Length: 256
Image (tube, one colour):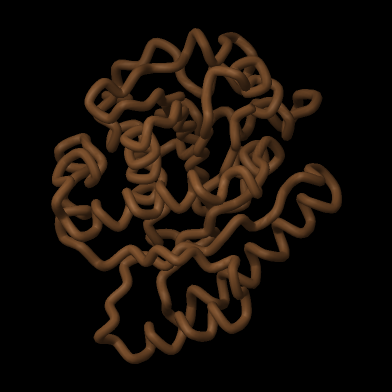
């Protein structure tokens, strides 16, 4: 049975897509069968996996509207070692079209059930807002991985996200919980970041992942080459940290 995780944070620019593609590549390197679901109309996770979003015949849009199955729409990211259910601008239209449909928040969950035995991990890259797309992700997931910077405003956003997850848990998906908080773009030389990191550990305990992702130029460069940092430059500190994080996820998975 596949472990399904949303990578979500209502704050933009916190490294959700970077985390999704690099965790997918790290898990693939660790021998896991991985499906990456891009639920963001910007299609950054699609492009960052080396797939041209402008050339897609089928996408997650078709899956949500039930005009294609995941098996039909999935694309292999050859250099990265995982499968991608891609997204492009069409997906923005799905928001409007889903509103009038039955079970609109369960569409992705139903589609994923058909490929449950084909993957060890399913990673869902959510848009930076609480939309019908994000709701589909949260309704189909076993848990949420929250990438966050150790800054004051990030703590404010985390409160909102925790409340959202509680509401979805109570009303739509009893399995949903926060799997863990991943500290990203971390610079130990900044005193505030160290203080916020300590606060997170004090408040959330073992919900804070041991792995810390450092601020790293190579991770930022990788998407322009259509690759995750883990594949683009395996020797970079950021890439090594994501491989370490993937190993931590594999270890934690049986207990989740």
